Image (cartoon, rainbow, N blue to C red; front, side, top):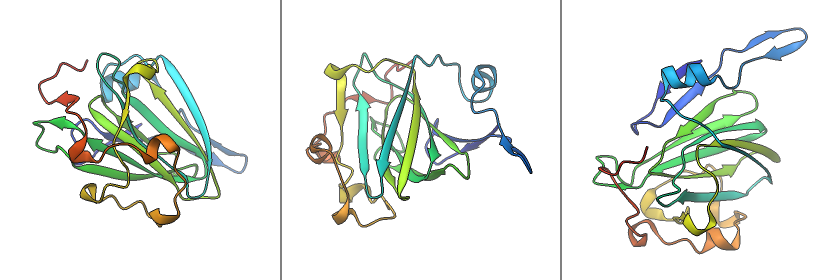
Length: 189
């Protein structure tokens, strides 16, 4: 597994070693030992999967303390642009984001640590999206930021006017209006 740093500390791209031949391909999608050594020690407790059509946008989601989550995400069918936004007040990268294309073809994964909001947009006809979480879903801690906020300047690589969003995602606050749920000095792990 190759680990690629991004402009946001702790947010990393994982590229597996893929073995291909005339029969198809094989790769190890997750190794606890290798993840702990190369990224950070972690214990994932919940796996989720979503299936979405072209133009669907989900996010920008996170969970508040004490149920905050890290996520390891990948696209197993189709293609998405996946985004992580630093929401830790006091961080030198507060309000900045990374956007990474994840697809069934490139096999890339993105690790989003606690203290970051997460979202994605579907660029293919269908996308199956999987994510591992290191904390269970807690509806009372569910929170989000508007993925349409122009202040974040996210290139979703699709016309956002035509995007399909849930009612919940349509009503997330703008970045500057969101509560200060995380600070750089918080002990998130």
